[in-house]
Length: 498
Image (tube, rainbow, N blue to C red; front, side):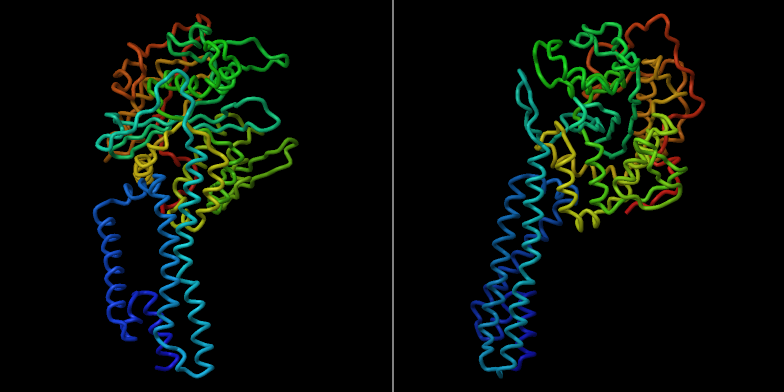
C-alpha cells in the first residue's frame, strides 16, 4: 500500500468509521465501528423525521438537552480523534518509505485535529447557550405567590389563544437612577398561526389609568398625576410608571421591585389584554446585538441628527447601519418628536426580524449569545422557552402588523381609553384572518365594537370600561385611516425575508 492509498483510506475512515479497519483485515472491529455509526445516523434521522424544526429548536433550550450535547460533543470528539489515530496505525504506515511516513503522519495528525473541530464547536455552542439562558431567564421574584407551574406538554399555553409579551426599551445606566421605559411595545401572538400585532405606546402618554382595585389605582384614583418637576417637566408619563412603582414600595405594603408587574398590568389594562411576560432591553446593549448579526439594512428617509450637541448624523439613503448608528436612528428626537421616533423604532424592529437569518445566527452565534445575555431582563420562565422558540419561528413567516397609538389616532395628553381598547380589540380580531392582509381592514369608528378579547388573555375584572375622565379633557380626534399597518410599512424598500 502506497502513501496515497493510506491517506485515501484514512479520509474514508473519517467519514465512515471502520472502513480502514476492514481494509487492514480487522473485520470484527471494522464491522462493530460501522454498525455503531449506522445506528447513530439512524437515531439522528429518526429524531429529525419525527419532530419538526420548531420543536427541535425548542428542545435545544432545555438545560438537560444542552448538557447532553456538551458531554456528547466532548465524548464524540475524543472518539473520532482516537478513531483516526487507530485507523492510521492499523494501515501500517511503517512499511512506507521515510518520506511517505512523514507525509502520511503529518496529514493524519491534521485530519485527527480537523475531525474534532465540529464536535468541539457544537459543545462550545451548547455551553454558551446554557450560560446565556441561565443568565437571562432567572426565576422571577414572586413575593407571597406560589411558584410558576410547569407547562403541560399537551397544552403549554393553558388554553390561551394568544400570548402577549411586553417588549420594553430602557436606557438605564450609571448616570441615571431607576428604569425609564422609553420604548413600549406589546407583541400579541396567535399561538396557532404566529400572526402578530405589535402595539406601540408613546412614552409621553398622560393621565395613565390603573386597574381598579390595585394599589396604584387606590393611590391615583383619577389617573397618574404628580406635581411638575422643578424645571417644569412631567414625571407622571407612561414611561415613568416602572420607575415610580420601584421607588415607592410603601404603596405596595413594603414590597420591593414592583415596577415590572405594575407596568405590565397598566399596559394590559390600557389595551384590554392580559400581559403574560415582559422583556426589558437595554437600548445601548441592543446596539451590540445589531453589531453581532452584522448590522441591519435600513432606508433612512431623511438625515437624522443626534448627539448632545447635534454633532452626529445618520445620512439619508438605504445602507447597512452598525449598532450605534441604528440605535441613534431609532432613538434620536433632535428636530423631530416621539412619534417620528416610534416610527423609526418600528422600522428597526422590522429590519431585524427580516434580516436575522438562521445562517447569520449560526455563524455569529457566540457574539449574539454574549450580546444578548448582557442586554435583556425578563420574567419569562425558562420552562416556557421550549414552547416559545417554535412560536418565534412561526412569527418570522407570519403576518406581523403594527398599531401606533400616536396623534391624530389618539391624543397623548387627553387619551380616549375606550377608543384605545376598541382599536386593540379590532386589530386582534383582524389578525386572525390568515388569508387577508391585516392592513386592508376598515378603520375603527366611534360606534361600539365587541368587547375586548375574552378568555385567559383578556383583562381581568368585570369590565374594561375606562375610568371616569377629568371634565377638562376632550376625546381624541378620529383617525381617517386604518391604524393597523404592516410592521415595515412606510419604512422604505422592504428587505426580502431570509
